[in-house]
Image 1 (cartoon, helix red, strand yellow):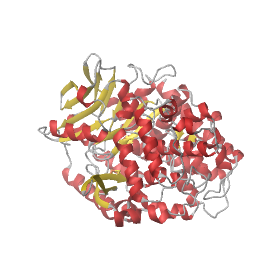
Image 2: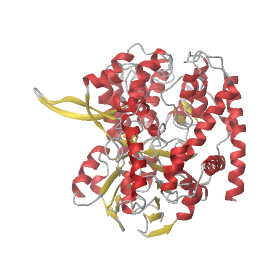
Image 3: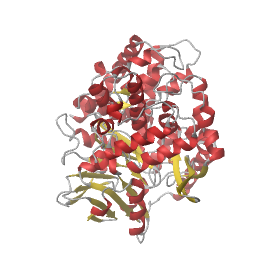
Image 4: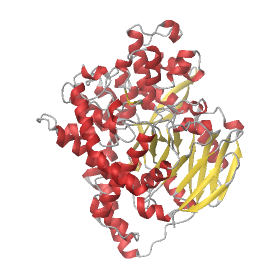
Length: 587
Ligand code: SF4
């Protein structure tokens, strides 16, 4: 049975609902949550109001199969006003399963700061005034010790001060260094006076056909743990991309002014591994282990008192705080990341905001009166650290605005041409060419992970373009991700979870499905996403390419606005049938 736990933070009331029927129609994870959200998210709903729901969801593969280790969060984004969807790893999916819930829905607003405690069927709201104001890192330490006696699987989610300040670029941190990073879930927590969630349980996955299951499991495990498909994640992690992207002019540098970073080698995955890597860790039940954690020694008192800090890193963080700010020292990047992690900002977004502010300063759009006499300059990490301290302290209006995201800042102060966002979401770290940018614009959550446009660009490097074919490849990738995000497997395991493997896995779990059913389900879920997005105000005809990107050389050369628009029109045409399917089936 698939169950949803509903919690009202105002009243403390809880309800458990059987949602097995929804799992049989929409698979689970993103499919089920989108169906639930479509009933509740409206254009008028204030994302930071008590009524705004937060959904967490897992799918049928979580706890049964390896690398099905992610959890989906769906909410209304305070950053974009559009669908908020974010994915995180850690131990959360196993803890939700162990507690007996595939979906958790949270509404209401607690009168005072609380943390939500779920331990199997026991649900409590625990006042935590003393945790309010504390960093996302220290809260985890405190709650881990406090809840140490719990048995079974346990996961801890929390926000930092940025979420408490309702910053729409704030994240929710999950366990060790995993995040619901994008689109402002941290602010939604903060608006509900919800500082943290501790969830635990000791239910285990029942297996019926043990022999067949074990054989299938072993095949999956072997492929995930040892195959070429996952080697790069196990070895250097996604930061293996830094040098190759720079070589093909696709590594955003100095606020997307160029795709080549002259110091790429000094901030590469190889350099981090050789000089700072202390540990590789994994989300629960994942044999890939892509999470790379560095140690940083820091003097905290003269003359010889040092502390050791652990900071995780990956490609996106190295781009946003490294090349895009022109910081070429790995230790300086780690120091900034540590500050960001404590505050609980989305590292991509805050990096893009700092890059915009630097260019705005260089162009005289903002001045020393805005920055409290800081001369923002690419490559100057000490000044960036001071700027982050000002943002965290809310020193003045300008610094308070910076944590509202780059779209807001550019609208207010100017510099929209070089505000690097797509549909108000700060841009990820690939400037491979047209499909990367179109993918950010049209993707269901405006992320590089929606339809992998960056990968399509790389497949067409040096080849004649075929716009229709390229856009169709992105569309088909996005469709299949509706299935994997409903199961909910990690995208880094996508080489293993092919359609035939997924079909076999679902059959083993008792689903009566075939490839045709999966294809139909993917189109239905895809269509639902766009029906929901359009209800919230998303409009293909409003999508814009930041002007600056028509003036820089990308992996596939120069980009034009006409090319961007043409690809968007094709994408819109491709999804129109999916929307129709969704409208008919959920009417
Ligand atoms: S590949 Fe990495 S992010 Fe994905 S589940 Fe495994 S450890 Fe987590």
